[in-house]
Image (cartoon, rainbow, N blue to C red; front, side, top):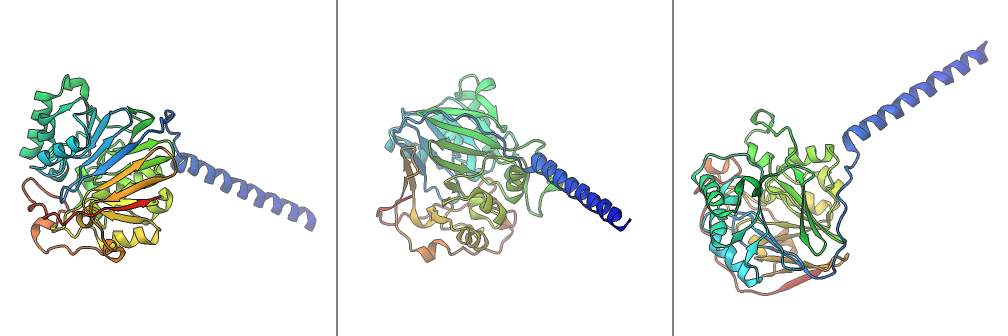
Length: 357
């Protein structure tokens, strides 16, 4: 009889273990199973260049694919249009196949109307989360007046969309994920445009870069839960290095080798934050910053090797040193409203610093 009870006991344990395993597998497939990515085109092996422009406290990233197709991710603050158009001219770019506006804050769409008016733009990809500012209205007016067939070519971003830039370069949309974040779901001081930023990834053979706009930890968590393809060689750090982005788990899962932070030397928001920089350093991620190094250029021929060149040099200890936020009301929201920014910092003498990975 004792032996019979032991057998039954072992059977109960086995059943419990089986339930735990089944439950774990269910949770994995429901929440963490990676979503299969799109089939990537065959890379040409020709040069892809990505220019993280030095536009002060904002984002503007120019992508020039093999064969001449181009994309611009964000257009920084109002008045940046001329600088962006000049950078395009230096790169031999006379049009944009795709303009991605990650969200409707002035440090990301500020110069978009000037860019749209100053060159041919074929498609605009946007979160369509509005912001009640004159700057956003100027952006919409420029699309209506200058982009051909805006009903078709002003596109609402959604996961699963892809944009082929030719030569084997593919841009994929990872966020915003429906249902969109609402105000009541956000941390204190958070806002819907940031949380619902357009997040894209660019793939070219063995090279990849994740472009996150002002996405914060909540956005990162949602993408991880949905199994988004986050692992990439390079990260464009979310929200200019805010302490509310680049979470430890996000960095652990994505395994970035390098990270680029676009921010202004005169910014009042404490970007990049020491907390975010410490997390990047702990994860073994090498940091590049426009506030210290000027324009940052990434070049690759679709192999594991890629080169990162900076306009100016900066010491390693400087790159991992955060800025202090100014204690005033305008900094509390953590983002720039229309007209709430200072002049761009004066350029330092140029010198080249190149790194290969």
